[in-house]
Image (tube, rainbow, N blue to C red; front, side):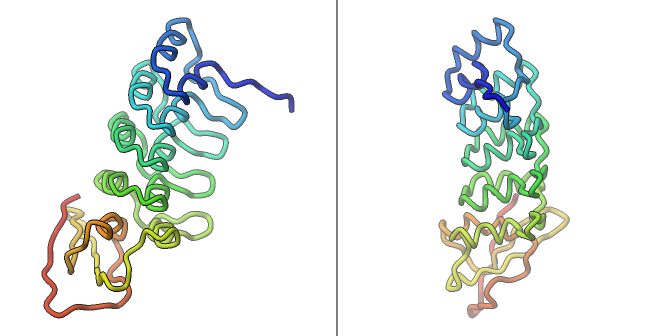
Length: 206
């Protein structure tokens, strides 16, 4: 297959060149044009955390749920990079919170794997599927713990879901480090089988 050069709009988006993006759009650039892997300008802007460009592209009609050839969405790209402003923007524009790639990877999987606490919490607020599995059977919790972002045994945290308000109940006060993944454990009844005497419950609303 012959090499296909990257569209100018795609290049400006990935480099965060907002003025160039504006100029290209005014000049009639195709906002939906894709590269060989199926990525468009909004994918690249989202992956780089360029919120001003993402907003501009969305305002000009870019699809918040457009997929690459592998099924990646702009939201998945933003969550991978921990770009919370872009994550919130895309969700506000109708991005599907639990949309998965062809390998079954969701934005929550990626945010958890890379330890992006704020993105994990925001995705959970939008009712992301915490028990969703990749084609390999991995949940977000599996991805998080495999990458070293999980709760350590000494933290003795137990998490349970409440369908009524999706509160996260921590049966032992978590440290800031472990709180980053406490939300991702929503739906898991206990971790490590550890316990402490007289734990004091606390609640974090999502």
